[in-house]
Image 1 (cartoon, rainbow, N blue to C red):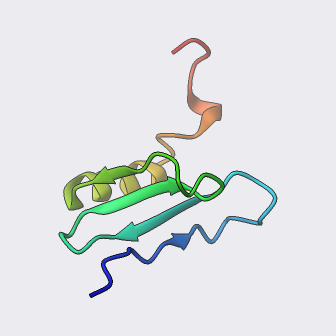
Image 2 (image 1 turned 90 degrees about the vertical axis):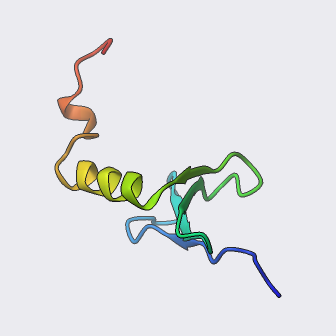
Length: 71
């Protein structure tokens, strides 16, 4: 039985910039990694954490232009 996650790249990835990939795991969690460091670290989110993260992205919570320098 193959338990390797199926990784998907962000639709905003153009191949020449930093990209992220995510995979839904068998236990319901979601994994996130840097597409250029596929053997590197992986962040794992619970379904609730993933929902909150995606909502924050959609709301601009992580937009660099809204973060104060040194914050």
